[in-house]
Length: 448
Image (cartoon, rainbow, N blue to C red; front, side, top):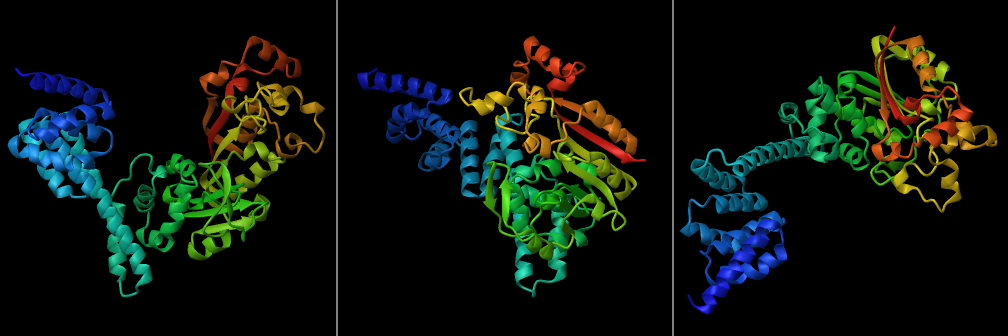
């Protein structure tokens, strides 16, 4: 064996190892010269394998087809070529090559994974075409009602992924999949508003409440600017009513929950109501609705802790619920680590050089309530209700079905030392460890 051949063999083995361990730069450096010299060499496959794993599979284009022409039943390269065609958008060619692989090895896990990927991509392509049809038909009256109805029925049969709230296309699929009346859904569908709801993070909470809101007329109390409206419709709500005493129907300022900043939305609340018949937004309180409307589900997302007259609101809700209706709320516990709603909101952002942080961190907020001025946020915006009191109040007006105390994460709970527990008990002798550990409470209760 010549010195050159020995060097190539050594480079190949090192390059192969680099490809398998994910060192793409070293794999390219060692394998590409061999592949360029001999495109049929195994180095070509491992180079393509490394490129595919690094997400730069299009770099394989000039190597893969040449290699496969000499090795038509090479399983690894067959999968690479299938993925290469997926990247190019040619799903038929991808399926052709993956079927060759499965004919050689019907149980090959990676090939079976690609088959599943192809199924999802075909479904998504069909969904995109259906959604495009809905958008086009609004712009061009020549498109018949039949075309729109057919597109909606097609979407109604496609099951979205579990976490559809994170993807615009999947949320649009969910809008029709979860609906209980296609004709009604068509009247309320707005592609841009669904996209905004996903972009700003307002589909996650409605998705979690899917089974409580599907087919229901929903009231969202303390809705802010009404950001969850389209999210609830995507989760299957028949209609959405949002109410908040501070709402400005003509403002486009919205809170982007994903980046935790205020941004400008494409439309104001009033404009949204003009476009979507099943969305109604009110500046007001629950008392303004009593005797005028009733609902199947009433939702409060981190609102109960802000209700200074919480019993009056619960009494109103009891009157606003239809027979068999339900109240669903997520309550932020004042007696947890971050129950004060003041910075720092969690230990990861704690700055121990910031006196304001030190004032409220590690359950300190519990002991200083009496020392705060009457106009302080905690006294003007939080009711500081105890969990047992909240549970008793809920039971007074509703029949509790679900009550879950959801603890803070482990890193936060590690900060709850016996010394801190003892300090808190000087202010509240009967406080329980569970109260201190609980971050939020999730409750579902039914009308009596």
